[in-house]
Image 1 (cartoon, rainbow, N blue to C red):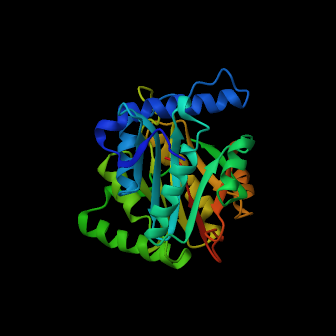
Image 2 (cartoon, helix red, strand yellow; image 1 turned 135 degrees about the horizontal axis):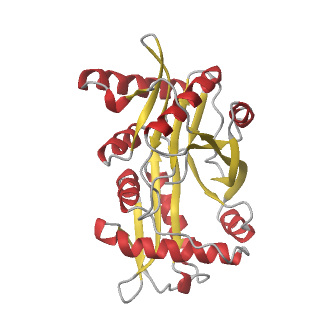
Length: 315
């Protein structure tokens, strides 16, 4: 099939504004088709886009129409062996002509070429045509991801990577890598941690016992929506040596939310780890939103044998 687009091309900083427009219009139309007519998806904070594009490390791709305008895009990310795609969208006037298949397959090829052993994405559970579309491309529905929130709270200030002296910080980064490897072999969140600091989006909260690192959470406090005040502390990644450490980490996140001037901490919980959501709700969390986790056939993910790993597949 001859498609009315060319690409993929690398996404540059100059593409962020038109990319933002395609994103907003495409996802607003998606909500409209799902019956949520009053929902308008806003454009995102440009710094969030810069983080996502830098994190993609070459996996951020776009396609252009004959006039040179952005027709579609797919931002593929890889954290060691873990690969995922998002956001991705096709311009509303070019949908249903095969471009969606092209951009998803391009993302899959990019991740496979770089050794990803997990390849996935998330979509809304109510969007049955999206689920059918991705299933036809070889993706399989998995468990829900539930976004849970904790209200900000006062308490002792948590230990944070960004507050450490350079030598201590380097040692802690090595400990973070070692802990992640022990709980989720092959997974590496070092790039997201470094870019969170580079773009001043948040910090990494640390949980220690004596000199030992027990866990960490990569958090963004910067406003997600362009032109709006910050509302939530978004938790992107969590690794814990033991699930018993979860209440202590949740308390630290609630305090960090308060310190960053946000009203709550939002944690996206992969319910394939079946005991985590009940534990978070028992600590005062509230379930707010659901997404459906889908992974490519033969490139699925498995819960850790011990400890906790939560990995957000959205920006």
